[in-house]
Amino acid sequence: MSAVLPTLSDRRVTWVRVEAGFHVASRAGEFVGFAERTSDGHVVGFDGRSTPIGRYDSLERAKRAVESAPAGVAPSRSVAGALSPARLQLAATATGLLALGVLAVATVIPGV
Image 1 (tube, one colour):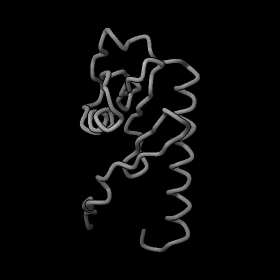
Image 2 (tube, rainbow, N blue to C red; image 1 turned 120 degrees about the vertical axis):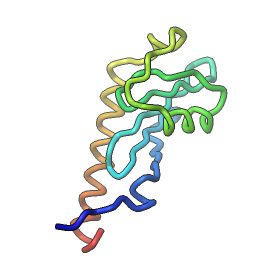
Image 3 (cartoon, rainbow, N blue to C red; image 1 turned 180 degrees about the horizontal axis):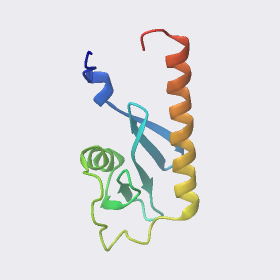
Image 4 (cartoon, rainbow, N blue to C red; image 1 turned 90 degrees about the vertical axis):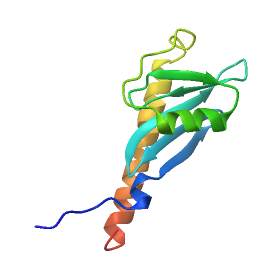
């Protein structure tokens, strides 16, 4: 029996801009979290359980926070109400499409 060790590319987070102000992150086909711009110009980061983890003044800072957040971070009081069911559905759809794309590439290219 042989073990498959993760490669550097398996740990890299890929970000997809789903729409203006809404970005979804995945790592090796697994949902990592997302970042959403608010009407006041801040960006709220959400972990892999769609729990708000913080409010940031730039997309780059929110992305770094999402990438480094442990699963199940307790929500911040200032962003707890920022998540809508429509955004959750959009994030789930984007993640599913990204996973299907990874599956398609893995099916077409041997050894991936």
